[in-house]
Length: 604
Image (tube, rainbow, N blue to C red; front, side):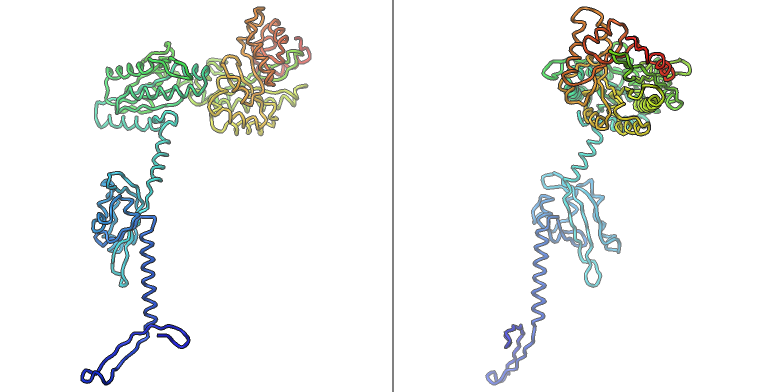
């Protein structure tokens, strides 16, 4: 009906005719139903919008009756389970779950009886092609206006990509990034599980085989670290092909691999080792060359009551015995090695005590100007004042310190002692205000976390200017993985960098040019031949000095013992040197006395 003002109203009309006299009159009623029509239109629009939202939702949605039969389903759910509308509606939703995940069924009875109104879980759904989708499920009980349970709504969000990323992250955390093999943490876990099974099985044994590449350092030094990585990858593939399917092959670290074998006798272990040795019998393709390598192996066997740590330690000890016996062989751990292993453990404990009780000392060897004889700097060298064995040089304990992980602690102690001592000398000794000190860094220290902070802390605590600290690294360590970034960070502090024993590690010129190096130190083996008049005896030193000049680097010669060597170095333009011609390494007290006796004389 249209009103005079143009407004349209909806009405409901009803007429009643007189049955006896239809043509006479009619009784009619008219009822305004505009509000009802508007409400009905709004309801239909809301239902249509809800249907469109349900159908177009990006997450899977279904409704089920109170027994779990599917009533309605949207396309996203059909995509998740890989099925059609007809295949889903009327079935129980649980039939699409992975059988192993049925523990995550919606607890409908508990929810109907007044439990939590919603239930959330993550589980797998089986598609029609037997593939699996991971979902996060949210089930909600819907009640009618009277509060009685009516039906369930279930929302399924596909989280397959997230779960795949989580699984990959977990795999990476437990596997070596280079070779893809299990890493040390996963190895220990599997070994502990294997040993636990020996307790339940009774009489079973577990064998551990430690494998180490004999020529790995040579490959890194001569062909570069990329070739060393390629060797490890190829070797991992060959070893994987040599072991049984149930065995564990892991990369323990560096060039060391470990095999864990369950339920094998000695004969089977010998066969396994033979296959391992056969795996390295043919050359490896490295940097376009055929390179032959050998391996040394150690075997240890144990059962119930043996710890994973002790079994690996025994296999490691046997491997080191194989190295000492000439390499390219296999040694089985036996009782005779217990004493040796115990002795190494005693030395390790004593070294820890030495750090705690200040038994270490720093000795200093002067580095002098070859032209004037004036002292330019000092090299700090660690010694161990052993309570029973007397004064020990670094060769007696630094290798063990590196094996046991104590080397960074030793290096940090030397760094702090040397920087603090130099600050005191600069204030106490006449003419020492420009003196610098050189401290050695091993490859293990370069890769240790927090090195830059350790160096910065030592400088801050001592008050030594950064330029007065020279850090010396072996040439073989200069090209190590990740070293460039550490050296750049150290150089940014202001510390000066030196390459020690230069000429023995076959560094490429390009790597030197890319690193923040300030000084090259000529190895003493090349200085020893300088007294000879033969041209080839001087060729390496000549090459090093020319290279340094071209790159703008300083040069220090080590091991100078004679005046003839000094004269030759002067002729080649080497500005600084150290050696017994001037002094051996001295204690701090001896160095102060030497300074007073020789500062003015400078006889050379």
